[in-house]
Image (cartoon, rainbow, N blue to C red; front, side, top):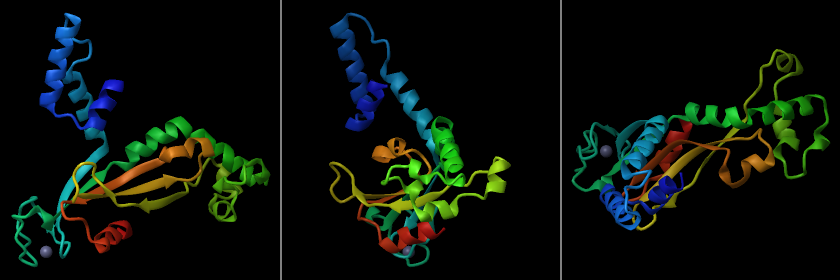
Length: 214
Ligand SMILES: [Zn+2]
């Protein structure tokens, strides 16, 4: 896992990975136990589980294109320059949510039991589950007894510049599960990525708002 993290964080190419393998073979006198092929296979599996589709849009009018370099059929803008194309990567939120709930879902069930039995002082002051807003959205006692739980989520979006690629801007849209323990939510660990949108020339904010509305 440390090797996979290193490769993805440093953005190493496949060629570079092969050279690393060769280098390790020379240094250790035998081929490494975990080779570049294992890293690539692992990363492809994760990619297939998370990415559900990739679409391309005109950066001026939002018209959907068949390919990255197709000219816009609506406003007739040439796509020779990739500044005019927005790439939209839709992620599998269900897959991510299931993973999160498998590990921490019991915290939400426990918290809702506490809220329904009016023991909210149990939560620390910075815990959102103590707030009136959260408690209003919790399921009724009747539904809770039938084992039905409301999953309370918020959406967020933030533009971030890609490291080392100065003009390219990526805008991820996240769904944030609010019902977990404060400790679980630390450092964005309860965030699931809905989509990531990027263009070489930055993205018009109106397109992002449209995505969130949908
Ligand atoms: Zn257009």
